[in-house]
Image (cartoon, rainbow, N blue to C red; front, side):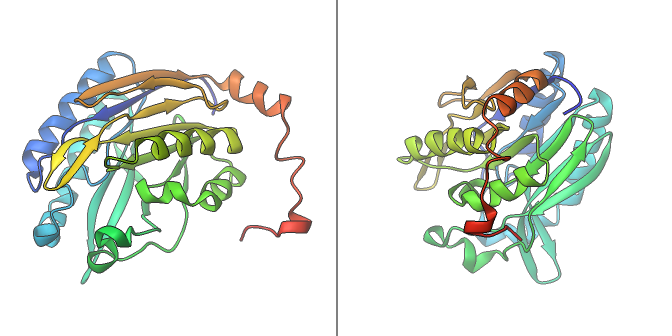
Length: 263
């Protein structure tokens, strides 16, 4: 991070399969967050469509249009935008988090860990690489929902210089405490900021609790959503990050000679 960054979360109830409605909802949230001074905003997982598996291939064909809309918003507001969307490549579908900055798509990450309990692995292909993207607001590490349960990924991104982890999600009840505890742990153990955007509302049999979080490098909750549509805003302060890493030099004290180096 080169400077302090005002970071926002757009938490909302995703209309299953309705790209136009979701794009309108997200655009309005982005406009409101920009008016409050946000320079980075994170949207939920699969925010343009939800997990409408029956129609996901067709819905993914709208993703280039959605990205063009985000590029225009990014340019208008001088804002970095992150969120996950369905991506179609040949016969394969991916859950892909995109980074739009300066009016351009500058990076993307395909979800590595697919949640087999909900059949993700039956409908989606898994990504093959982690991703840290240099942006105008700092180096962003990308993860999506279930990835949160795999700490190796976050340590790898931290070692690659990530300042902020952006995590879009559709994390349902009743696992609220897992969500909150794991997000704080990822921030504390890697000494970086976390911006986690969950959706809210009911989709089919699933009830999403919201509780999006903006978390400091010390693990302090700077802003937290409840169970309704909301934009959260907090400032991630560079000086705090540097100070904390100096107080507890975890990375200098690592012992990769014992437990191995991450690839």
